[in-house]
Image 1 (tube, rainbow, N blue to C red):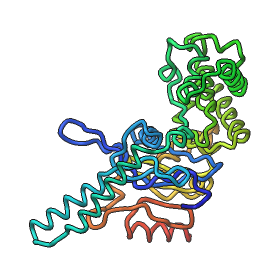
Image 2 (cartoon, rainbow, N blue to C red; image 1 turned 30 degrees about the vertical axis):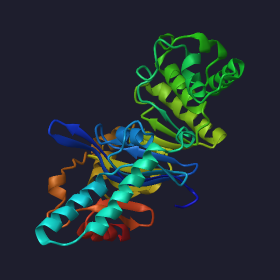
Image 3 (cartoon, rainbow, N blue to C red; image 1 turned 90 degrees about the vertical axis):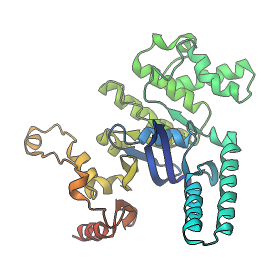
Length: 348
């Protein structure tokens, strides 16, 4: 893994049991985040953005794939290995082939994955913090702001109350609040102030990576800009790396260095921010961009909304798609035939 890569997500799968079947919330998603950058993750509601963030921070035990932070595996799933063992055992029954050595090797990989997942360095994992979407639901109404922000420090074993208070006051001022707010409860604040408390709670641990899960979607438009500017300031002052999850593409364009587009649990396009907006390739990305309104009545009269209908634009009956590189740094979820068409489109 490159020294410049802080987080690497490799074939991430997050499945949930739904009756007799499974819901594939995140299905084989791979990407990396470089130190100091803002990586935007966009897509419509229910596409798996939030689940991806929560899986990375280990709020869920991942079904399959690996998550590496600073070169160390902090989360691992075993589904891929288990499926391979089933296939090999089936082949043994049907064709009589001996796969015992391969099966033994896969079992060792399962044991290794389980060990790494369970014994990941907790101090390393706490270097990843999350800002949640709903500032009301994510703050305990029975705790004061001081208790909410200091909770992480106390869990880590800090006992000096004066030092804890000083750290709380310091981060409150960093996010635009004042010391007097420390003794109040969440219901005494506006939505924007609550989100600032959530941000303060995440930065008091001095993280290297912050996962911001739609941190402005529940706020008024005038407050959204303030929170984005605050995150920008904290990024520069604390040398933070940010994974910014959102469905508002215009905000993501302003704030992100690279953008990944998700659809139904899959990563369908990944590119630099400017490249994605100037040369979108996947039909779903084009559909998302066509939905962005602009404060120009003449443009709005001419704007045509592109509707994405997968069954009409893709034929995956012969060959299944994978995330492939069309040009350096620009990846699209496609099969070989589509890849050639995208390459032609890029050349033109």
